[in-house]
Length: 121
Image (cartoon, rainbow, N blue to C red; front, side, top):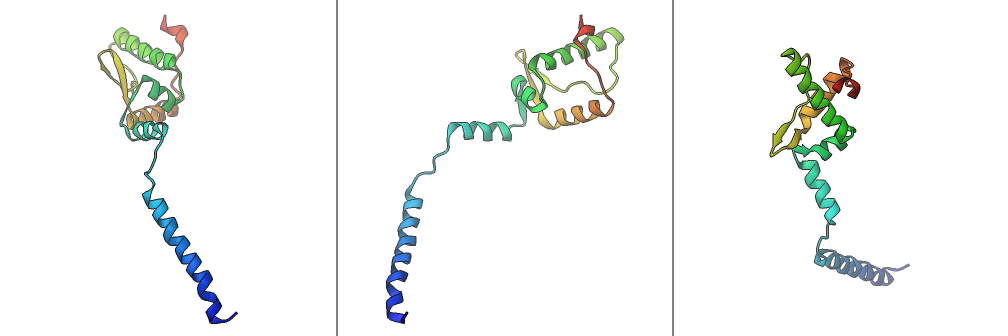
């Protein structure tokens, strides 16, 4: 192929790149609401009860049972051995800080802590 015949394909490729760039740049970036809510949830420091449930892989009822068991143990004996499930309560809603939940789970898994609803009567 000679030099003269290469300018047409080069021109076509160049125009395609330029037109493609304009098309991409002119389209508004659309983000689905699911993606937005996931990003907000992932960047949030605090989790509500449902979020903590998903984060820990426990049912919400199990988290409530753990809190109840720990409270009862603290009230009965006046102290609690180990680390209690970390949470705050705002208007009767429970909120959990992610890194504290990880530390709580690691510590309680290390000592093989057992919670049983039978003993929560």
